[in-house]
Image (cartoon, rainbow, N blue to C red):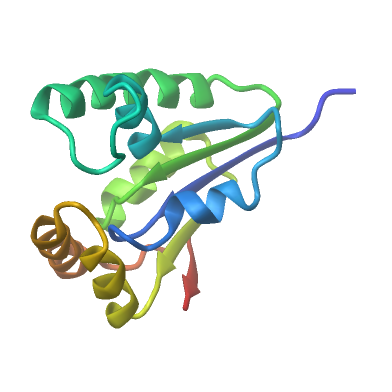
Length: 147
């Protein structure tokens, strides 16, 4: 018997712990579409967060392929990780991939800033967190995880 189809979109600001959240819950056969992991693989194992525009562009193209793969799943478990602060974009992506859950991680700002300081491009990451917070609004489909 095939496993039922379960697709979770995990969104949140930079440094929210999206990859950590998924890695703690994923199973061995799960499909995971994670921009950071894709970019790191393309860059040859270098840091997940500091990469060239060419690597970022290639990672975005690879993510589109992974998202198409997730949308086509008939059964099994998949996770799609995106920042996606805009509620309309998040709802659209959730619909496009056939998400059965949309989880938005919202740690306290102090936690985000502390984690950002540990990143190679701390200033850029901090600005990205502020941009995300400025653009964020909840959507009806969201399951909020605070803390």
